[in-house]
Amino acid sequence: MWGPGPWGGPMWGVWWIFPLLGLLICAVFVLAMIRAMSGGRGFMCMGGHGQHASDEQAELRREIRELREEIKQLKATR
Image (cartoon, rainbow, N blue to C red):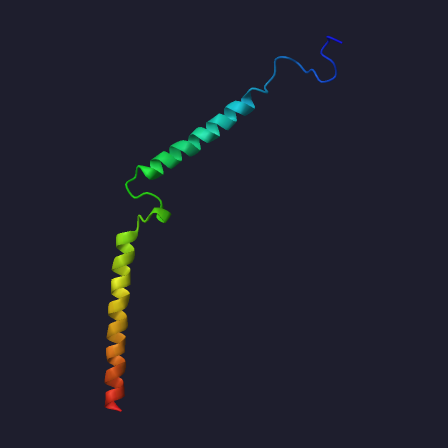
């Protein structure tokens, strides 16, 4: 009754390596997230590319305006 029973395995083994590996993986992820956040840009979903997007939108609007002017010129020449 007080013996190890069928569920008792050897007391010394390598079972302790699994929690250590889990902690190591978690630490690597936490360090990666801290590095990504401290880069000054933040994540893409946090608006780190906001200035680039607004420049691109302004450029596209300018191109659309120019194309509309060209269309008007082509219609006028017909």
